[in-house]
Length: 156
Image (cartoon, rainbow, N blue to C red; front, side, top):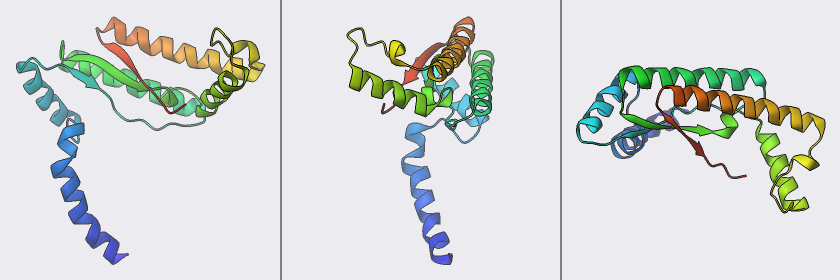
């Protein structure tokens, strides 16, 4: 309501002034590029990320993959040598349910080699193959442009 809107404005202001600069390069790509160039001039390199939503469909994973490639392209063309790594959350490219199921297998079956695949069904294996294909594709794409990949650990 009205009270919430009134209270939100000072809170947003405080967050933007105090915390936003610590965790973001800006609100748009031009702001990020300006800040990245200042860092580069001071011998500071970057780990980049654009938060993309997790989902539960291949359409979401494909959109996220395309957005990550776009970030790599912008970074390599506009910020050469500034960006060392790009962070990727596995849930942006893969089913969170699959990751939970794999963790459950590891916790209950406790395979000595930490390989859950012998205990996975055909549907899980197909989803894992799809996930590994996406991950391989983005890693190669990033490598070809001189940017490393940093897997952002999840809670699983």
